[in-house]
Image 1: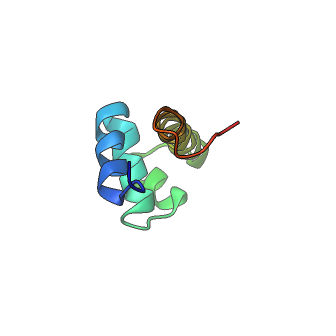
Image 2 (image 1 turned 90 degrees about the horizontal axis):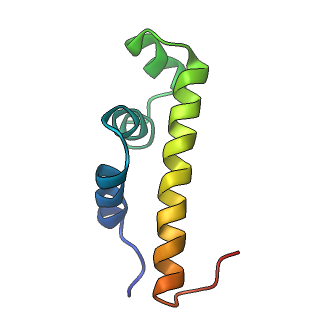
Length: 77
């Protein structure tokens, strides 16, 4: 398995995140929006956005970690 491409990571995100998490994740990392700006747009607290993005990060990292271990790329603790 080759090094994971950005496209593959985005595909994982689309498959595994809720619609809301995906929208917030993409707004933050792809569009470069600050959590505060996303919160204002959605009418929620910044902490809500922060938790949502952090949860998305953790889900994606967990999946990537499992794939790397499965394909023997490296051992992750």
